[in-house]
Length: 191
Image (cartoon, rainbow, N blue to C red):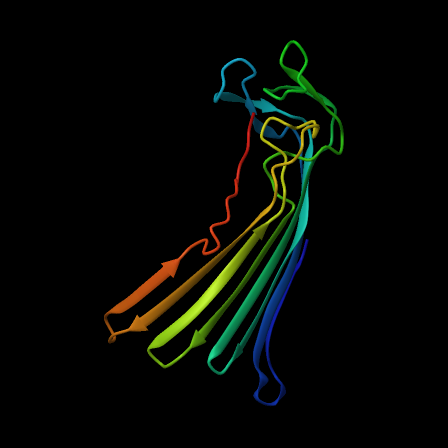
C-alpha cells in the first residue's frame, strides 16, 4: 500500500486545505482469531483460522478558513477469510456440534466495512469556541457469525457537540454533550 498527503493554501480568502489518502493490503497465513465457545456462553478461545486478508483505504480532508475549521475522514475495511474451515459458534446456524462452515470470501465478523467522521469548530471569539462532530459506522456481522448467515448488527450514527472557553493561559472550561439525538445503537454483537 501507499500513502499520499498534502496541505495547500487555496484561493483568495478560502483558507488552508489539507488531506491525505492511504491504502493497505495484508494477507495473514495461519491467522489467529478469538472464537466463541459453543458451550459456555460469554467464553471463547483462540484458534488458527488459516489465511485472512485485510485491505482498504483511509482518507482525510480538512479546511481551515478564518474562524472555521472543518474536517472529515473515511475508512473502508474489507476483512475476509481466504480458506474453508470449521469453527465453533453460538450462532443459531451452527450444527448440532456447535460448528459453522466458513467459506473463502466470508467477512471476518465484528469489523464494520465503513466509518465516516465529520466535524467542525467555530471560533466565536479568541477565547470562546463551539463545534460538533458526527460518527457513522456501518453494519457488521456478529462475533461468532464467521459464516455470515445471520442478519448484521445495524450501522449507526452519533452526533456530539462541544464548547470551550479559555479563561486564561492556564485554565479552560470545556463542555461536551455526546449523542445529542439520543440514538440507541449497539457497537458490538454476539450470540
